Amino acid sequence: MSSRIRSTGNFPEGYVPFRQVREELPDPELYSVSDAVTLEALHLPGPEPAIVFIHGGLGSLWNSFPQLYTFRGEQGLLTYVLAGNGGFSIRPEQTIEGHVADLKNLTARLGIDRPLVHGHSYGTAIAIEYAKEHPCRGVVLHAGGDHDLTPPWEKPLLQLFLTLRLYRGFPETTLMRVLARWAACHEETPQDLIEDFLQSNPMPHRRSAWKTVTEAFWGYDGRPDIDRVEVPALVIHGPADRIVPMEVARRTARRLPRGEFHSLDRSGHVATAERPAEYNRLLRRFIRVLS
Image (cartoon, rainbow, N blue to C red; front, side, top):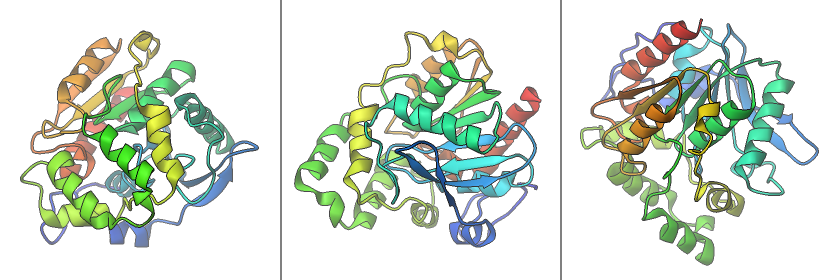
């Protein structure tokens, strides 16, 4: 499928509204990956390498919907909800190692061999650790890196939400709009795009989703053995990202044995949506290198 799509409305080149994506793509299904864990996932078979999308700490399987829409039929695709984030399984222990095991079991069940692992935000930690342990064709890290993934303002905010149980009934649009505009997006990103993108990322109302962040991801440091990621790695970052500093991503690319760094101007923490045409061109070029 071609990514040469020009959306109507105040959207950038290549952007397809979330509602259209949901209407045209099938619904996710449930897959048991262990005795304790069942994951919600969307699997679209296609040519190898299959791209596996791993969302961030409070994210959703739909966060990469511009890429799911563009690459459907062009590559195999898999996106899923981290255990504890959706309405299904809660991991007995919230650890990166546990999430890596879930991913390994999910790909094995679906017959996906040596995927291209694409991590976003905290999902980059899972992508890195998966690539250290299991065969894959390549790694894409967006808005993350091998350390310092937690901004200073996040810990007091999440601790407040957990202590007061605000996640149960807080008006999610208010919080998510503020964080998206101030911390995640470039100042030129249209408000129409922010509102549409947030439809793909409702704020989790389960305590387990928030505990996944605090217990599994806070303090992550994958630097000591990062040289075990021997496959090609593409690191993409937006300079307006106030969640993960761009220098973290740049240094991660330098430490990766086969790392390549790209900065996408006029984007922040969600360049996948803010600059979808450019992002997809980088991803497509990287896939050609792997073929």
